[in-house]
Length: 366
Ligand SMILES: Cc1ncc(COP(=O)(O)O)c(C=O)c1O
Image (cartoon, rainbow, N blue to C red; front, side, top):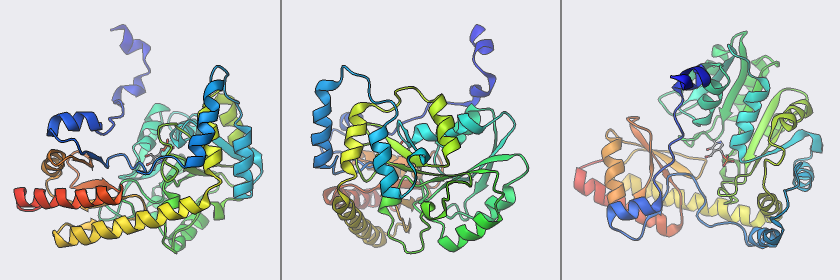
């Protein structure tokens, strides 16, 4: 077949990303109208009012290409994070930045080290650029073991991906563990600190990646507008990284990789720190509510610093399906004995516990 010769061989093991079920699909399947979609770690409240207003103002201008360098947003982020503007990259989601970093630095045969399970895009990027996967299992399937990550580093390691809080477990590694790790890690390895859920964190032990960023060492701190800022549909995220890496990304990215509506929405969102705090507090309250509901039902859960909770179940597929029947969409990971339950509105949380109650009644246990 001609395509076998045409398409790069290393892509043959990749499969398209499988998004969670859409609400319409579950509505049809369950026959219920009130669907809670808690499968993609989205924020339930929607964009900030200031962002909606700014985005609406962009609409009549959509005949024009966006400002390709995202300069206004970069300048605003540079001030917010006290770094030079040359150290800010903006992407079509932080997802794009993960890929662009891979594209900028990986050669076939390089090794990429990442704890696992974690965000699916790390293995995708590794495969895409012909690099070798070095997966480091989470302790007990839950916690990062940064000593093991360090032990997995070799002369060939080019990138280490760390996700803090980790998707899908919601756990964090602590400042102490990270400082030990960082001081022992070779400083010619690109260390990508994926902090997509940064704004939800309340733990005092959390190491803010930016505290360890000096603009010289090859550290890239990635954040997104998709989560607490509720702009997932727009696709916009950013990274703080040394200027040579930003420059390389600028050279290989699409000329207009971030659309104008996204730039406007993101910029306006940065003005509302009060709303960020309010959402963080509300997220925390919803988690507390879910934890007590899970306790009551004998469901084992893992304390989360993000906007989702990892629960244990010996029959993930059955429980996932039973929850769908109740109109609640969570995220399953094949036969991994766990499910990831997103945090939604207070009403979603109430429905989630009600759904789990029904599932326990039906299956005997979760
Ligand atoms: C850990 C992690 N990193 C990055 C992303 C990508 O976010 P974005 O929407 O900015 O591409 C996600 C999205 O779910 C994520 O969970």
